[in-house]
Image (cartoon, rainbow, N blue to C red; front, side, top):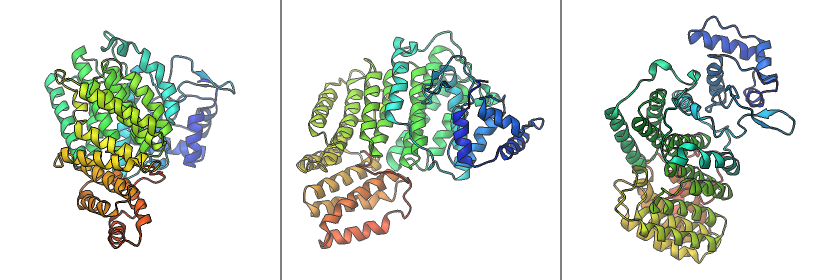
Length: 503
């Protein structure tokens, strides 16, 4: 008991709209269904949880997380409720109270496997019930960067570029079902790594909607495996699998408009990479959160995250990895109209990309960033800048055309659609409506074959640009066709759509 109000629980309790007595009855009913009929929560106990920070014993935190998840329609974890027992003092607020973890990150190392399993379990429950996380908010990029900076740079695992030795994981048993956890061998991890490649290829081709639940389920299983301490070489590989699956779960969630859920997965991925001693992977995971921020029209927040991602990736990051990070930073700069900074950053990206020698094969998670992606991101950055500086439109068209020449459409259909839309938008900004019509129609041919909401976001952005050419017969017809195919209810409410989505 902290003696201080549990502000996290109080805030969520207010959103849920329950009375204290109603919540107590719900807890008892759910606990009984879970095999704990002896539990007898009452109104006074709920009051102590909220007003004096009393932390109930298991299974109550898990029960509360499930109840709030169902009520609010988004994943709510034990950590979100402020019900994690901590052994160290927290930061002091202005009012004298303490907050052990004001930004939710980083959580204690021994909590990573438990948190991973808990969060994925809640996400799967939401999937079954058909709920979405529209009511949740993303954490600010500056808050995440400040909270994670020292953690990412001073963690002994990352500092040594190796997993910790002789420090068994003690995951909170409230976060997973012990009987599901089991030790695994190298053959099982081989199969897990192959499954990651299958999921990654599917996502690149068709978007994240159809396979998201499968990825989250696989990540949940890996969390159970990580509850055991394996030999170091196996433990490191398991954390790598967890990081890769968490990035995919985040990217797929972002792809279908579950933005707060996506952000949490990117943070889980960074923690998993940290546990495995893979600094470049941790930096790349954070860069995904930055791309998400640009997509949502928050480029300043993205730049805060990119500073952390770039510095946190460490010296082991290959030139191609650093080139990819530079393209995201450049896109954020373009969104803010900083043309000179964008051009300089893209120039550095090109130099890094061509300097990458083939004698060191890229990690599996970087194999998707090839020359076509470099040109595609350059096209997106220049197309975005063209809204501030029309002279950038011609450069955007050249880069988009080159990306399309290099793109393997069979395996990267979503990226090809993004390139088509970059080309169409840049053509509109460059006063070439006929060429815009051609490429927009190429995008329309296949956009309905993916489950990516981001492609629809980009189509809406391109559609906005066609307004200035109303009266042109071909553009008027194009606008009518777009209106017919656009989903009636956008998948992500509240998006700004500002220069949305990436190649």
